[in-house]
Image (cartoon, rainbow, N blue to C red; front, top):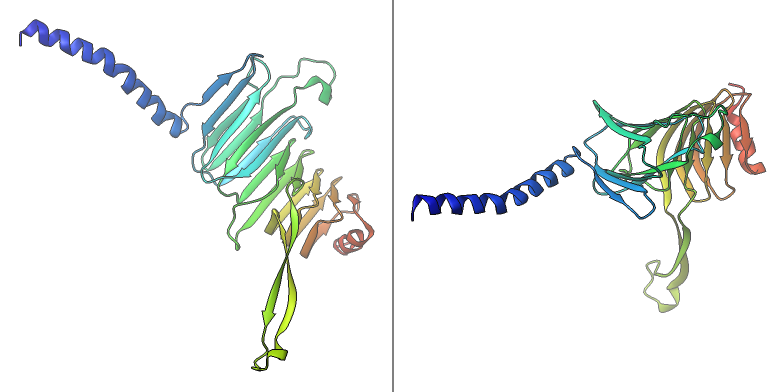
Amino acid sequence: MKTSNKILLGFFMLIFAAPVLLFMGFRSKIKKGEFTVTRTDANGQFTRKGAIKPYKVVKVAGPFMPEVFSCYIIPAGTASYAYTNYGYDDSINLQQKGDTLLVTYEHVNLSTNNNSDSYTNLSVNLYLPEINNVIIQGAGVFIDSMNARTDTAVYFSLKKWAKLTLGKFGSSTTVSAAVTENPGNSVPDSIINRLLSTEKSTGRFNKLNIIATDSYVDFGMHAWMKDLNLNLHGNSTIELNGNSRIEQLTGFISDSAIVKANWKNIRRLATLTGK
């Protein structure tokens, strides 16, 4: 083959190979979380998705109004995020500092009225395989279920008018099954038939440690907690749905805290006051 033909063949191979190599490079960076995938719809809304690197602490920070910035933590096999930004300015910043995943609402309030109406309501979904430490400041976090080991304790720290909502959405069911038992006697009349009921909830939480200062804690109807250590300081509020459940309860509730619950739960939470 002539030298000129070799050069021409190499040129065409480079042209066709370059897009493939470029795509593979971007794909690798996207998996590592170095780039995000962005899709724009007809209304100019930006949907951003990306991978999340290994973390130990999740910190969600908002403008001190939990109804403005919300974060939904959803169990998943791998860590990633997704959110829609309503406008051309990206007001959500996700970054990882050391072992901390930091999710921040960075919208600049240009209005003279410092209230929720002067902010754009935004939310972000965090798809996480597990959580151990969650810090919430001036934002709202919703968790309906967890992919946690049975012996794993989860620590929550709430400050600056933060809000934590557990088990608000999901389902709770009672499954009944017929069980046949024989107490050991071979006589057929000794066989006992009974109905065994098993209760299930999508919002089962094993060990929770919640420390809230001037913040709001909300337990929905599907929040079934096995071991809860609850500490409410300052002007905090605790709200319990009548169908929520707490097996073991310890902690502290300040005299200035507000309790919203039925009479049964109010009497139980009263044991945590005056300490």
